[in-house]
Length: 244
Image (cartoon, rainbow, N blue to C red; front, side, top):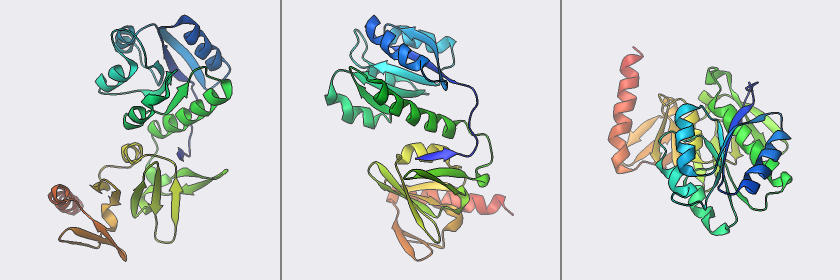
């Protein structure tokens, strides 16, 4: 997982959404144990939560799936600008759908504090990534086992997706991180990084050649989907023109 060099100092504002009062109380109790989280509100339905979000800025939602009228999944899918979300449920069969919606984590009830803490740490890492206002040329940290390695984003040649993992390819090394392509794509500067294929995100500054359905970065040949080729060519040409 990637983590920023600078951290946000204020706690993440959390909204707890569950139709069961006891379930809300349990999550709120867990939140109170962590100094990097604070309870901003609680709601008993997705409809109530939608109204709350119109009036309040929220960093993280703990969202129950099974609720009357509108499920947590339906509510999440209806949002254009989704806050970071941890789904809570008594049912395991929604895990695949949760992954598709790019949630931070998926907690099965009853939720132990240990499991809650793991989800909260994941949310904090993604929150830090989203809210770093520094120039990405200064770098960020990526987790490697129990350590963090500093990288410079502009040094990334390309990113390769491996299901729940990503391989960051550099000139002299390859680092593997536990993160989705969509979440990393949101972080990296869009003027430099381009999605050429569902499995590859490339740094256009390092492209040596575009030929047919392939692009070449150093000695690596990568496929480009037909529909993205024209967009890539336009992006590269535009970048070249404005740099003059």
